[in-house]
Image (tube, rainbow, N blue to C red; front, side):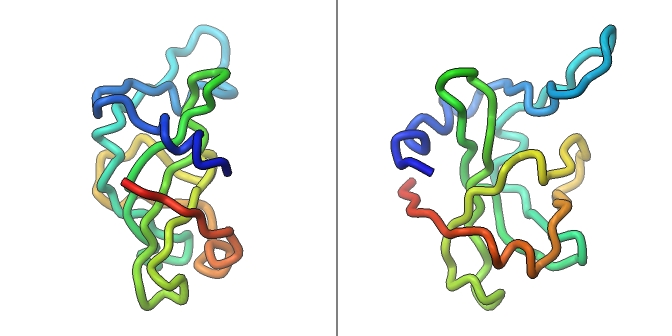
Length: 119
């Protein structure tokens, strides 16, 4: 993923992003979440492992949609404290708990490429 896309990742913490707008039946309202409600939340694998914390969100500059969540991966998980760009379709969004589940196992997370990220 290009560094320039990461640079436009978040707009002042007040972004209201239609992160679940895909595949919504006609007549139903899209679920919308604020970026500040996602940033800082812990992401867990489908097998219950704590993977890391959402540091930022990445927007597609052409559509304005959130496409990825930048995760700061926990040390000791075999990730070397790096960052990952997790496509948002792997997150189970909408829950109001601090633990944000993903549909990937710990081993599937390990196959994702690391990214360079600067806050």
